[in-house]
Length: 228
Image (cartoon, one colour):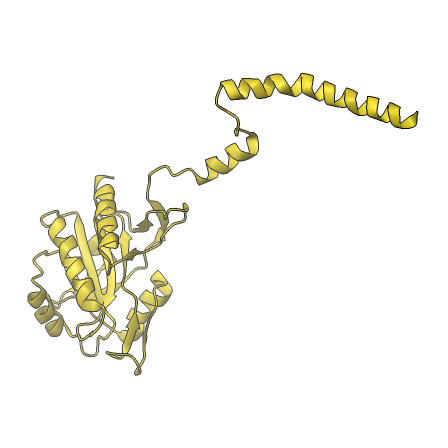
């Protein structure tokens, strides 16, 4: 007898739930909103990409000497979109490819006074202004806003490792004696590091200066920042 009452009670609960829920389910099917709900809506709102480049934070300040023996600081890039790379002229591995890709970027925006490049050597003991000048001429650098920069080594290492958080270092066991990445940093007109998001909605921070896809992405994003 008790079991029969339990079955009747459960049946009533199911009947009441069906009366309440089924019309709502039918409405959602009609309106193509089967998976819509507050929790899912909140997740999608958080991951929605508004198409704008992410602002990482202010780029580190610097003051260095360029290939023309002129003092250049971050203030010389104010009001300009610019790229920063770390390299050295005697690099036997990735630097030649980085230089060629940077040349492609220069040529893409050549003649635009609001675009610039800062190529900072991590081997300043060898890369004097005169050496950088020869290197710039060899590459065929034409832009007056492309500065190859040198200075105190410890100061430059701090700019890279602490300022941009891009690793550079000395290592006698590797080819060329120095370690560094092939990354390019993108800076906007107000001096902020900017970047796009990856396929998962996370900021990429820096751009791959070695692969064509990275160069294509940075060219697209330079164009965006130039319009801002």
